[in-house]
Image (tube, rainbow, N blue to C red; front, side, top):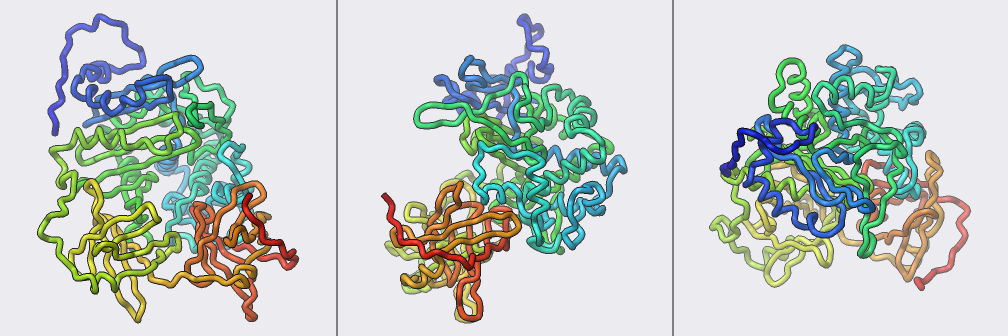
Length: 581
């Protein structure tokens, strides 16, 4: 590991902020680390723009806590270690901690049905336990995705009453609880509601007593009121054109978001995690543990193995890395924790980037450069890669659809190189390890493998990130629809649970689906009666037909949504083909 130079001082002759601990004061003189962080944060130091706050903790010591850029553009207030940020999805970790605290206090049992603590929640016909909520295996739809499906925009108001109303409108679970994972903010919202029911108070009251105050996290809180005055907060901004404009955050949902904290408070928490003993150490160990679903490790392709603390873990250059990221409105945050190496790096921002975790990850890579087991860049000149004749490569060409229906990929031979094509502008070369196994040629250390399989006259391939779980794609011939086929899909469709109505119409010869309050999305045909759109909540549409082959409706699959049915209305005025103007 890179040597960290600490300049020891015997006497501090300047006034220090009372919020800084002696650990941070001493480590402020860590010249080498600060220099590296300054290099990585140059873009936030130039000009009047929103910024980021960074924390680094190593083996229980707070190595760094500070910020760059502005917390308030109008008043030019700068970000520092005590600037409060909305933690977005990092809030989920602390909700899980509070649930474990209640279990440790014998106030709840993970096997209890959730209606025991949520008397206003309907019976869904199958037992849903607290453990199902913690393991994201309840089968409950993500109410935020349902809201988006109904035309919700990020700046619209959404509160806990809205959430509970939408949760109770669900008629059928997506799957039997405990048999599958589907990430859903509904699970975390219900855990938050259970905390408030059991403690007969607010989440913030319970968190202050059992988490924030005991650890000296004096600037941390949960807020259920978007209009609450929060001192020393980083105001959220969104870049529109060449200017940053103030962003309105109207979601008063506690659980999946709305924890506010600072770089210093978060650093105190992770320093505590490194050194805690006794019963609390047991709780933290549970938070960082993975679990199984039906006897198999709970893993989400693209994320890694899931932990009870709502984080994920996978190998980064041979070392286990715990991580979570979040984006709520114009707030973004990310945490990377190498537990075995005792290193935690995190970042929070108020500039609406969507993802700022690369800063924290670059710090971690710099500090652990001598400990990684895998080089930072894959050597594709290695002798393990072989040459395969073009005729063999051609056999793998075709269109493929992921098993969950989310992704359409094309495999095509271009200039004697097999390519993995996501879109016209996003494709990756495949380097052969043998006639059917290939590795993606990517920059960096991440390893991605494609393995082609032939079964019962159908071609498949599996996609694998590192040594993670394989996801399966099957080949298909994209449907080409004639005019009559397209027109048969045109009409109004309604979901009766939520009274959501969508219109499908022809626009310039293409099928488009639209909501009266939302955007329109082009429907791209895949298999028979299946279409993909660019919307994350309206990702896959699968149409159903009656015995006479007339369209009855479609089911939707998207983020936190599965098998949500939209019935085609009988009254279907024959709308004329429209054209974009």
